[in-house]
Length: 119
Image (cartoon, rainbow, N blue to C red; front, top):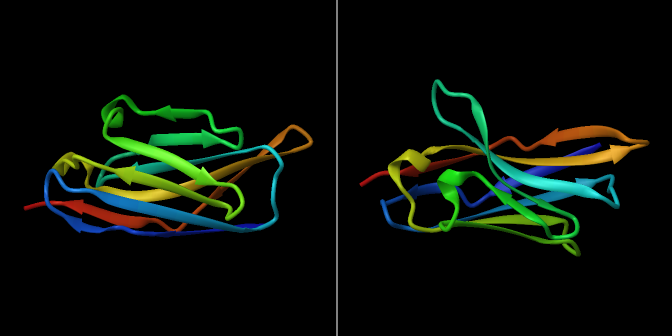
């Protein structure tokens, strides 16, 4: 099993910044993808950004140029630096890890952290 614990959410004014962290513990996968998803009230959970164990990144168009995903493999931690925040970034942000066992993807989620962008 894998446990994911997010931190760093909160209330911030438009134009401000926040940094989310997600620490993984439990079993490890030599190859994995970690990422952040978000879900606003009444909406589906959507991709924000992902990063592979090799460091390749992928971003949703809505956050490109404003958000940066990174990871520290030694600490089993993934980060999401969020700059120039907008009210539409308000959502619960979920950490995700996908690892593979004999080519079968295993999917793990954190409990979520609230990000509210409001003046």
